[in-house]
Image: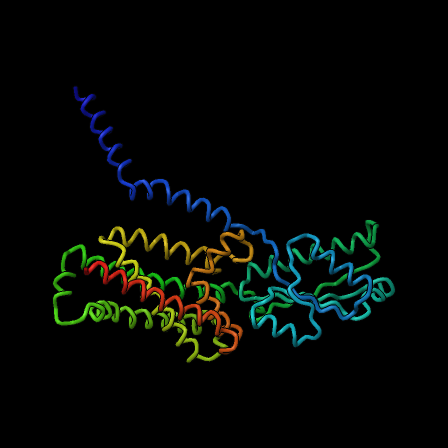
Length: 370
């Protein structure tokens, strides 16, 4: 009798879970999504890394080396440079991740003097990725050397000189601090905002606020304004710790950097308001925030894993992640020292996203009021 009652109770719970789409999504959707995303993002492999080559020789051997570098499919020739100034400009605008400099009279030095030096310059704002690129390029150049020598003891030697732009010592904290600022601002601004408004709706106090003399949007803005101040203070604290404790430089304009932080806080708050208009409970707001904010910010923004090494579909998805553009701005201003001319595009995207989230929130809020 007891066993039959227990089986009936378990059967009832199974039916209840199967009818609850939200529970099914948590049980099966989240693990599947995490396995797929982690499986494609957590990798040391890369493909189509954008590089530039300054070929000062333009002889048959340097042309063969360039073709050899491209043949693997891991490197994509984004530009052929004409001077060292071009290298600086390409790194500043972020169009390349590595540059290779081939010296004049490459073939003559290789076959005549049996010794030649090639320079590899990588973007040190992503230390692990830069090291991977340099190591792989070095291996390909050594393979090219071995193929030309065709003997076990090589009579020809190509010496490699490596240089890391913006982060000569390859300190991982240079990449860590911008990412942490982004993650904390996103979580505090968006998640806490969505939870705060959802709590008011869940407790039934939102209806009381809406019948007050204040317009509905002013009520919402009043709820989120403290989080603007708290988030900005957090950003300043992290910047101070990064500079004075970990030695991360702020090469560019401090005013431009703080302005970017304010813009991203507004973007995150607008996203949090939109999430709150779509949810009725704190639990739902928490689940959506974790799925839409925390995981994408960590995995698809370039914070931990380079976007260039991801499959095309994940690279496309990363374009709708606000954190991607904010991290890009932080690295340009803090580490590269570039100005408005290099960050106008990611800034414009964040402004557009903020307006979109606010308009969508306002329209959805009006629908719920009717």
